[in-house]
Amino acid sequence: MATSRDQEVTVSKGFRFKQFTVEDKGCGMPVSTDGVLLGAWAEAGESDEVLDIGTGTGLLALMMAQRFPAVKITALDIDEHAANTAQFNSEQSAWADRINVLHQDIAEWENPLQFNTIICNPPYFNSGEQAGDSRRATARHTDTLSHDTLLKVINTRLLPNGQAHLILPSVEADTLLAKAEEYGLYCQRLLNVQPTANKPVSRKLMSLSNQEEHGLDAKTLVIQAAGSYTNDFISLTRDFYLKM
Image (cartoon, one colour):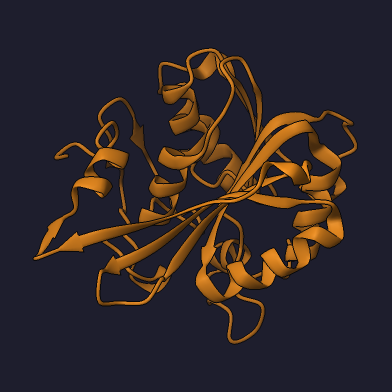
């Protein structure tokens, strides 16, 4: 299981989950542990309208559709190839009628729709050398979706009392959280992820709300102990991974 985004779980043809398969077809951000963690952890109301920003292969949209049988999901990606891949994966699933995939830059989307739930596995590199593959560079670097832009979009698109769920490496997460209140957003839930108990937090999952008064529910998840997955990790992901 991956402990950094340079060591992600990736597949060249397809990643099979218990109830669906994700074909990556050369997407910039294929199936990863990060995506599975976020899709398994994010919350939604029983019949929410969900916005998936930067859907990539459509993994998060599919996971939300599986977990919440009445939600409807709008899945956007700035990259046409990624949008086509997400559309293909949606059509092969049992939930195609509840997932609407659009080739669209969220920052330029003129549709005024707002959502109860937003989910996003955002770009995270703010500087440094970019990947040679343009699709992977788009998925990994903030050039096309800065964290300021993302926070502004969340502020604009989130309905009152809605929640936006994100995952980022620890340092980038702290930077984003420090900015969030400037956009009227407050962290309600926080999950600190450690690869093992003796390693530092490598990822943070965050739920942002436009309501300040709820307070913060912070927890920690350790992925592995003694060479095996922890009970907490298995409990979170068992509905998806085949061998859990």
